[in-house]
Structures are given as structure tokens and as C-alpha cells.
Image (tube, rainbow, N blue to C red; front, side):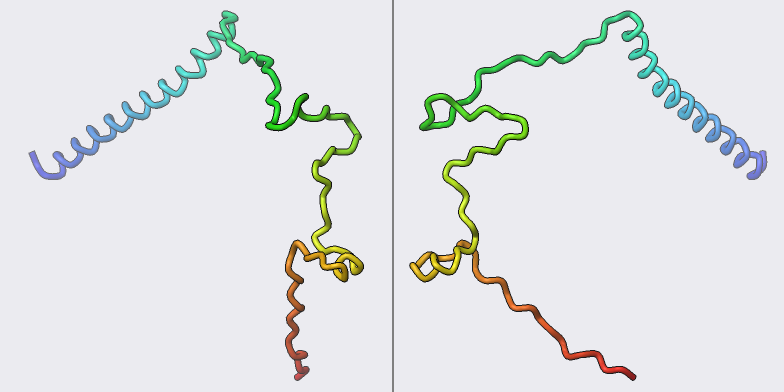
Length: 113
């Protein structure tokens, strides 16, 4: 038996192994959806059920959160404050919630050639 015959046989054996692995993978891939479809056909599908739970009442409140109303305004406690108080409030000593915005950085104009 020559070297070329051995390599030819080895290639054929490897090709058969690769083909067998590919067939097994495809068969396994087809079995999963097939089993699922059989369950659907037999009517054994399971569905999730939502259960009602008691609403969680935040600490310090007696009756829980406010009811949501479509198109209504959102109740806020305490009322929101602006980030920058108006000039009169600043004169009275109110501090801004945010630092002032940085000045815009500008570069020298581009010279035409």
C-alpha cells in the first residue's frame, strides 16, 4: 500500500465522519421544533398566568400611590424646583442646584489660502 492510497483512505474516512456529524446535528435541530409542534397539536401548551398582588404602600403613606389617570398630570411630592432659580430668588440667597454652564470655547478664525 502506497502513501497516496493511505492518504486517500484517510480523507474518505474523515469525510464520512464529518458527514455523520453533520447528519446528527441536522437531525437534532429538526427534532426540537418537531417536538414543540407535536405538543401544540395535542393542545398541551402551557401559558403564563398573571396573578394580582396587593399594591405596595410606601413608608409614611396611608392609602398608597395616587391613581394613574390617562391624560392627567403626574402628582409630585415635593414639587419640582428649577435648576437655576430666578434673579429675585438669587438676590434673596437661593443657591442654584447646578453649577453654571461653562463658557463656549472658540478657536481663532480659519485663514483662507
